[in-house]
Image (cartoon, rainbow, N blue to C red):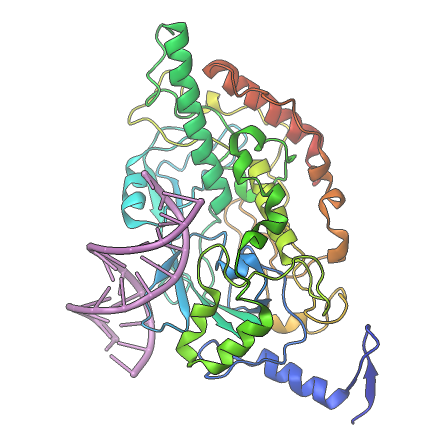
Length: 440
DNA sequence: TGTTGCGGGCGAT
DNA sequence: ATCGCCCGCAACA
């Protein structure tokens, strides 16, 4: 039983050792005193972890470092500094259960901050101006699904408990993009008003404009990947183009993997958190490109994710406390040709190897018990698990059709007045959607 | 203004 | 003891 096996990288290992390691790597629980450190394969960051899954991410994975999730997760105090616990806030939907002209539902991202969330719920549906309703997550025995994060050595362990019983909200980036767009609209509108002096019956910026029709809220979860240009001017700074190395600006590379591991091992269990910290630098001082050990560039995944979100960027947000003339659905551009988009495909390949070569599907991947979520009236969660996959190394920007879409001319639509902004954006979105939706 | 993480505190189990 | 949750605080964007 101790036959030698040849790995893709030419390394040989004792088969029994590998099996033992695999068992160990897969049997851990976030509460274990000691987590496996002989992980040979780390996972690609999972944007929509669901059900009772566990993942081991590289400590260099920026998304993991930030404990990100596209679900709206809020910090929950579990009185354990070693393990960060987050619980799901659910999703904000239209109290009237309205649908857009395309038959899409409104799934907004609940604000994480309690006050912001309360405020959010006082707003109204961007589609029909009806009241918004928060659908709490009850996927874990009647309680919210909980996610646990724990930094240990060179890895970041993630464990999810519960299965989301609600549709997916827009992602964090989409929500941010929407807010950013809202600001731009407001600024643009007020500027336009000042300049033109009058818009007749145009509502004031804070009122009427709100729902400018941007196909946002409802389509996010469909995972449409629009061309990267869209978020350009508006959220240019938020755009990840430069983020591949954005953590390298960190002056002090005190979080090198090796250092982290050493530190983690030398500290009481409860101190591991310190290693990862929560701000920009976290543990990512290390280079992003493929590391010597074969580590995959997790930043690329995040970049793609962020970029895609920005690209999808919907933009309408707030609502009026009362229905506006011409308000509701006419703000939504005729995305007509778009039937519900095929499920959102994880932007990052699910699994990769911390050491060694990628293989698809990755052996042992099934051990992470991933499974498809339930269906929510047209809402089709995307598989979080490794579906048909691509070699991660093949997923560069250029590999994604959507990312190859040409950028719009600089200044496109941003200096337009309200109407132009709406129509311009809509038209632009439509065009992009029509031309780019790679899934159709 | 909103996000994120920390941690004190409380009530329920 | 554990868990869910509330709250306020701080740092940051």
